Length: 67
Image (cartoon, rainbow, N blue to C red; front, side, top):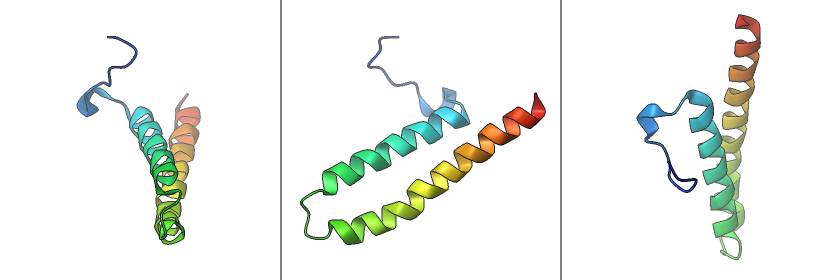
């Protein structure tokens, strides 16, 4: 596969999906810049952003435990 092609979601592992979700949240924050409601929109994204980070941490921790 070329470097710009994205794997189908069904073939991605949990870590890859969470990393992609994190990047999408970052992209949304950038898109909201200059929007008169950006503060309101970003407040809601904050919950999603930290939940993704929490899940990534849990995934990383559980993989270390199982090794």
